[in-house]
Length: 171
Image 1: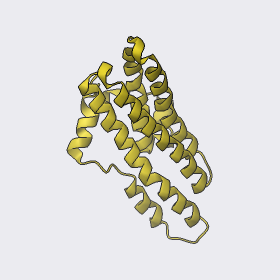
Image 2: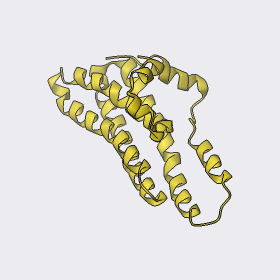
Image 3: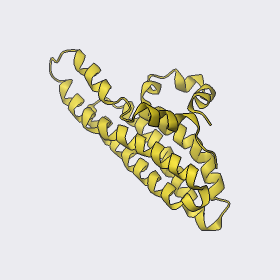
Image 4: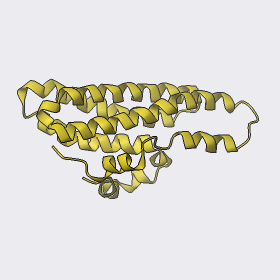
């Protein structure tokens, strides 16, 4: 599945929300959709039933906490929910590692890298929101938010980012 193809399938009610502009949110939603198929494969093996359940909850929690945090009024509140999302992303990575024997090498490698990209973005977002929350109380110049947004851009090299988003192996 290509990321661009997946984007076309996402409802306008979701893509029309300002939250859609956040890369971490888009990738988390994409990861959850990919996870649906991965979990289906994991449930086919009795040894990985618990992994499947935990993985799907953790993947869904990433997007849910990013959404919740984005909707909060203060930087401190946003940071707290982004930390929850970070914990869920790291948890998802662990479940993918444990399920690699059933999912296969290509799928597991892709998902580990995709979730690691989400972790990287969240690691930049948490301290940024803590700082942003305190900046709102000052008469700071408007360009500060634009500089902060640059920190949220993908830290991956373009070739690696393209690999993650072009051909997501399906289980």
